[in-house]
Length: 164
Length: 120
Image 1 (tube, rainbow over the protein chains, first blue to last red):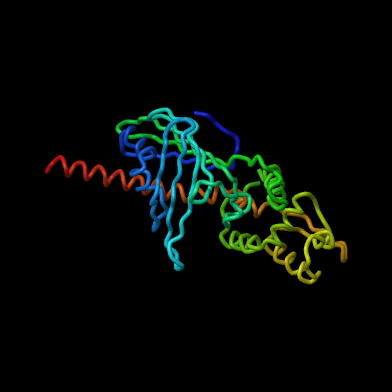
Image 2 (image 1 turned 45 degrees about the vertical axis):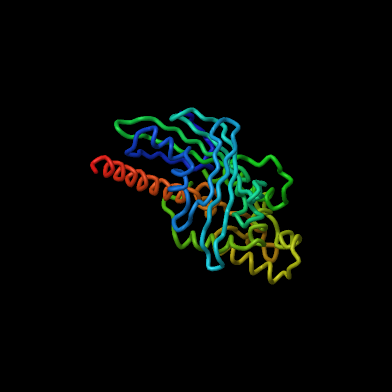
């Protein structure tokens, strides 16, 4: 298992009482993925997954708001696919046509990375499956996006070096 | 120097102070080094009293420290309260935890369904 030093990542380890193949399907079969991925009270009306290296994924989450249903779209690409062992994919917010959107354009917190990477590693443990999930921001490669984003980047760098 | 426990009140105050574009931009400027009130006011089309009000909010939230040099009172960033909110990752952790709780439930439902089908 790789150990990264970057602290700006969500790292979660869980053990599920289900065989490896089943937990793998939770991530790779649209019907199963849709069943758990959406936030409580929301649905995942569309999941498209081409689970192979370089394959595209696109999902839609629908949340009911007082102003009617609101849809959020996400797209990405599979980077590593090792059956029942490792799945790595990227994720960006996009419109319904798959055009990637800047996080700030859709009201996400400033400093939110445009593209993130989700890495899932599975291994059998007893009758169950141990899962290590790592969700990490990928530094944007377009530093000129906006002055404020740059300022915030500097702030984050500053924080990293001053608050240990 | 990381805070040992999350102080909810302080966290709310930090969020309230950050819930404003002008104040976030001021912090962004201060991340590059201390500045005087005039320097901080420069990029904005705001009156000095308005700027001063923003600074007071930031100061109350402990996000900036101000020198005692009369009217110059240079402002400096105090990054510590931001430690808990600066990382987008921390905002995503509860989202993922909830997802995996649901995966757990779903797996249990699938198993019960499977068992039911088999015994029928």
